[in-house]
Image (cartoon, rainbow, N blue to C red):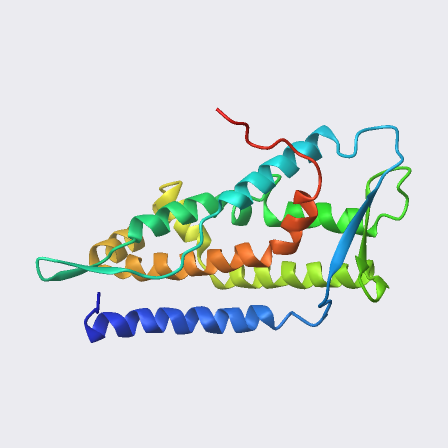
Length: 231
């Protein structure tokens, strides 16, 4: 529904802030690998393609990525003359789903750990010791080194977005924990309605982080892993 101008202006400010953050993050993009590409996975070491840890990491990352929701638009609803963020709970759910990827550095599917796996395999030239991944362009041949640059640029873009946000406040002060350092701020923002805009902003950013992890996802998803079985 159409929201009052004051509310619409605030959400417009959120959108403008997100766009500015994305411009800064996308400033890391320098390498162009446009065109059809394919991945080649090679290993001659006397073991499985992936270690037990890597297999678990692969399955968890791919299944989590497949299920990650995307925040598409903000809904405003009217109740007894007051206006509310209609999909506030959708934003809360979305942010909870992203926590292991963008906040918990000890988790194997945190974006830094996912990036390290991909980068290590792409840079490995000795497939007698570990898995080696090469990237072939349909016209230019082996572009593995250029592809590594692309992954690094996406990694830097994700890091830039996270550094510009307040996911620590979102997770440690509201969603997952109740850190007393954030209690006063959360109380004030929740009762005043400001937290609506904070959640909208971070849900939009998280959705963009999913897109920035697209190449990492493709590298993982190509490998064989268990699919969700039928009933």
